[in-house]
Image 1 (cartoon, helix red, strand yellow):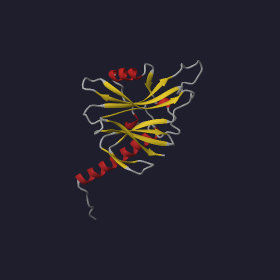
Image 2 (spheres, rainbow, N blue to C red):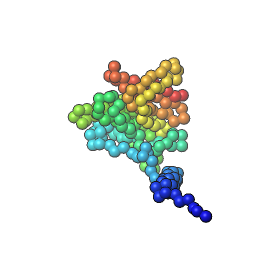
Image 3 (cartoon, rainbow, N blue to C red):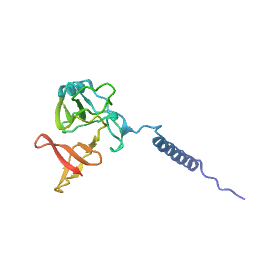
Image 4 (cartoon, rainbow, N blue to C red):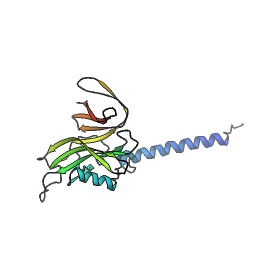
Length: 204
């Protein structure tokens, strides 16, 4: 009886396909078990001149970290609350961050929670490498010492719809989406014509 033999190239392709499927399975298993870190969950380094700009907003301000946020109510990825993109279309890298501004010192034994105000601030890159801070929103939280239920994420260009009016806005640049976890969301975007940030309420 004659046996049909698969050409070497065909056999190699079959082996390669099996190896690829096996590798994909291992990668996904690693994501599930936490062995492999998701790229979108990695924190963004803060340049020295951005640190200076943050300090110029408020002397005691700092970026809200992943440990400040209540991830039981806020959607992952769990990361520090800072994003980067060219937000105003001038070809320079910009940043946006939630800043925690302390209103009172942390008492001994008190949990390091909010105990202050949370500001949403955009930092526009200048030609000399410095950053111009633009305060977009302020949230007073002087009594709470728990975790924050607020987060930001980068919103890609595209169409957004305002909740109340139903009007649609086409974003031509990356924007900042501020989310009150399990409650509402607002998108802050750069209006090229007006040369300023504007906002639209996109979730309820």
